[in-house]
Length: 417
Image (tube, rainbow, N blue to C red):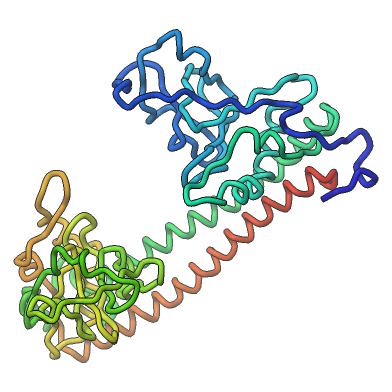
């Protein structure tokens, strides 16, 4: 923290409450919401530094709501929940209302404080707000706590110059971030292209006719690859525990990898029954684990586990030993392959689902085992390069965010050249 004797000339420390007030919103009831009317800004509407009413709920205008009007360029903050401390500036000419637990900053004197300067100051305070908010089980922060926080206040012309410099630097930073995110998306497309080429035979055959299987390949039915197919167990919440066997759920599966996600925070443990139900759903190394409700097409090939079981939203398919398991696995997660057929067969208008027959009847292009092994090597060689590029991009994005915070820190210490 900068001490008073190191402050730039004409700068001073002030509490936020001396230059602006933080107003809480109105406690609208869900029964008040209509299809038409005035938009109500809720915490979910505050996204990436801006607030737009495009997807807001709406209410019919009433006199009692007029004290909670939100106008263009006013700054809002989430004051409770998982995103406490998230800021946004209202980007619409349409009048809106402010919901409860959304705070609105009201500048007391526009001659002393610029709105954009305040917004950047608040972003610089975000970590402090988060630290103060996460003291209890439910994150929240009071307007009084935020108003008690201190900011550095330079003269208004200096504020405008700082805002201009920040926006110039952020503009360049945002261009770089956009390029990195574009590269991320291109990598996703490339990964799927690799899988598509693999199962068209293009990674292992010089001459392939478009739309035809290579010579020696044939179509098989997925059920031919499994000894048995079963769904997981219902009603196992009574067996939940803090330790024991792993209870594999959809949250442990993914669309883009064959690996089981066993991050500790995603693991549910159970002490399973010793009945046939427990034996039937016990996972063995190499088992195929499919998502069969909600998000279809997620898959993991089970690694060696001490003890694990599947729940009702996961299907267990035990493979035979006469083919390369990863070959079939990569076909299943290919958007143009098994993933396509599984989603094509989904049941249910509200929540997508598959039955066991769907897991036994989708088509699989099959080649000789030696070629399967070669295809898997070719796929993993290419995907390994993509993974390394992905890691580099992720690191660069983290560095970009650190640079953004560094820019703000320097700006409000008077050190932004």
